[in-house]
Length: 327
Image (cartoon, rainbow, N blue to C red; front, side):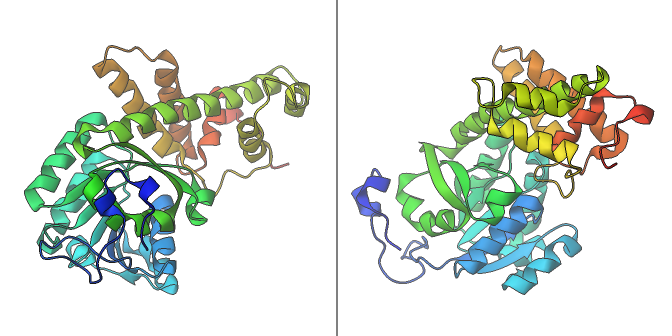
């Protein structure tokens, strides 16, 4: 598929000649061979949508059982990370954190093809971006810093928002993959190593995590004061304080819909800590983000780590006094 001129700054990126690669080994086809490293909630959905779009996809996960269901969608399951990326035009990483990505790429190294594109979609810390950029240089990979906005449902529907930074000269080659996993790509810069996409992702997540915990605390306070939480939701409905996100997360809490997670408590705790650390590195104190991290960690310690991040609601109660909304 050719990109439209308005999608790119460089007119030479509008169309690619036929064939998989040019003389320098750069990707030149709209049908890609993709190696996916990480098949959790997001990685599995992205791998599935890439395969459905006609790309040849091989996936690897540290726990193979989590990758196995993808075989029904035409995804080949690899025994090793190196096998997953062998000869791949594009490597997609969607893992838990920066150290996990570094480890996976290290394991994949024997199979990496110089000139391959690397779509790094894991939410990582700012210090991790520099390390990943160095690893890309060492293996001759074209790095795109590309975290995503969205949870399980938009990931499964191929409706993610991709925040991306990377060289214009290679964006046309990457476009078919972005089209398969997302509804929108927001370009933040040319240099993946600068981490501009990751910076924007951390800012966006700071808002999402704060809103999640604010919703949970309002419901918890309602319960603690002997009120029906629905009375609070009805009070603000349709007014300037209302928001769809509040109702969505409240419905999960009150309707016992916390599993399977759209975005897990344990992952939210990790992201909250990354946000606090990023602020501290740049002279910004983030009290709400720090409190959010503590709430998520407390909820995880109470046994809610794999539930939807709305389960941070339970951090407001002692473990032996958690409300039962299943009755």
